[in-house]
Image (cartoon, rainbow, N blue to C red; front, side, top):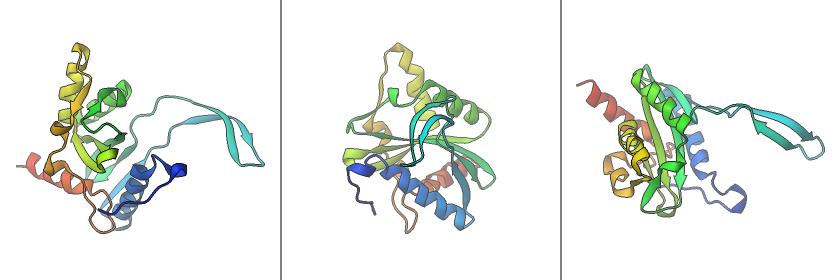
Length: 180
């Protein structure tokens, strides 16, 4: 799988960069229109000499990272990264993000998480149904989703040419299975 080398300056941006490249390819080829949703930020102070924001705050909670359309269907997802090899901690998904995914899923959208296990250099499509199963258990003490529940071959995201994280190949299978 093609990976970008990264140093301290762009640490944690690899997943976002791969998704940006993938989504640009999908868009340029007319395959799908998936957009990264910016977080609404109110800038209080801006240093015009350095071009940097020196003081700002989030105006409101965001929904999820990505929203778009593929084959006439709405797609909503968030991208998460974990350094833990054995599980995905549920604290990584905020309640308002989960609620947004749930509402979209209930309206017929394809809703999911993309989860990167950074130390393993593996990325997976985590279907909403699996996330929901574990989030329902959270109030009773469930704190994570085990790696082995996520790491299924059919959900592993691989590179496919210029598509660095081919999540639409998994979405295709889900659409095909729902339409049966």
